[in-house]
Length: 427
Image 1 (cartoon, one colour):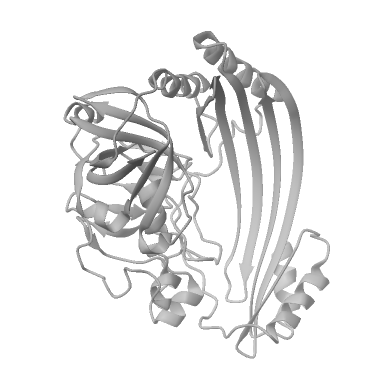
Image 2: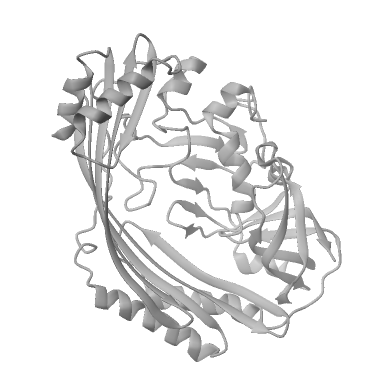
């Protein structure tokens, strides 16, 4: 394999080395303003080398997979000015098999992808011909090689497939943007269901209703749960914990959420986008409970951060980020959440997420797609509404957790969750 040649070249001067090479071929079909816009195919390559020289790390990357000598030399040169290495490259360890390749994806023809887009557009147009639509379908097939100087060596293949439709509904000065999409590593996606979900959000928004400012119950749809999860993604990042910038630093085994709330990082789910046998450092992936029954159980680490923190990597390299986030289902049907709400807000999507100081848990966002709940019924869409609160406070005040989880983006599996009280501000 090419990676073995890279390791051999690097080890002439380095005390340790790691190399990876990736190839990918993708095809994308896109529709814009109700019509086919483009059918594109592309190929990409990448080659990376990481070395340890005199206790310092050097990195280099190139898209030219024939430049073996150059990429190694640049990594060796970078090590002179690199940061100290707090780890050794891992020795071979057996990882759990997980399905990330679907034989049905490479053979999907372009005309079928065009038909998928046309079918979704036709379904939404049948509901409302005034909605201006964008749609698409895409596939990717990739292959990678990895090796390090400690004897780790493997090759893997993966696929990806995605379908989505979004639209603008303009009524006077009002512009509504809604839709639905899904992507994962398997061909098995129902484009009719994707279109029906998009239609559902438009139907619920047919009537625009006022809502008063105040503290009130808020239900987050699975898509809307990203409002709360941004802070948790940052808070459980081992580097932020080590540096002390995470509010969860020093709080292992402390209760930070309602006892019904459990969250896990799980890279071993077949065909999920974040799944794989190994992480980007050759460490076997593992399931890592982060919150169990409201209690902090673990943080996520890569090799370097684990070395600095005096702990072990959790197989979340490079960067200590999550793979697939899974939130445990509760016992309350979504319909019952709505029915039990006298006055509240259903949040599906927001604008401005990540602004301010998200690592602290604070959020203040504009509700892009939200609906008013009154006397147990969703009565219409709200406009010019802001939602403010703190993720960690919200998790202590969970009113209900849905009994059915749904995938969002192929790497988040969560039920809807209702928070008993958040601040809603209207113009």
